[in-house]
Amino acid sequence: MDKTAQAKTKTKPAAAGPIGVVLVTHTDFGAALLRAAEFILGPRDNCRSVTVDVSREVDATVAALSRAIKETDGGGGVLVLTDMFGGTPSNLSLSLLGSHPLEVLTGVNLPMLIKALSPSDQPLAKIAADAKIAGCQGIVLAGEVLRGKTSEG
Image 1 (cartoon, rainbow, N blue to C red):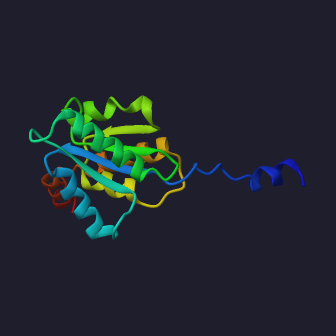
Image 2: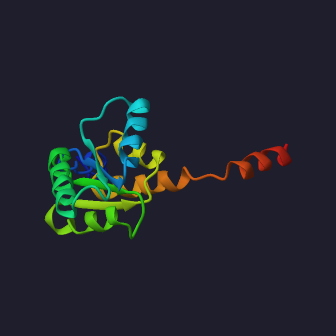
């Protein structure tokens, strides 16, 4: 087989296994997002939601987050989605970066979560980057879109 044919038969290396997704948000925001995503996609075994609120001690929240990370990781690492950068959910998530293969992505929305939960054989970093793009593309000032379409024709 010549080198051109060999190059065509090479496949990209597979991820070590499926990724997990953990939502870490203020109050029940993450749980509601997960319910909405599962309404669209169907049930997902690789996703958990961790609530951050004043009724729970920080140590208990970190323990719940660590547990969720371990439960969801299928071997490819875990994508942690938080509601806003600099908030307690993000800060707690970032504190675990060295203890497990993680990516922390802030500003979670439904398009981002759907992308993260969609089947993929890509590595964690690529799934995180694609989820970020989907989240950004899902933010639309609808009136501008409608006015643009109306004025163009």
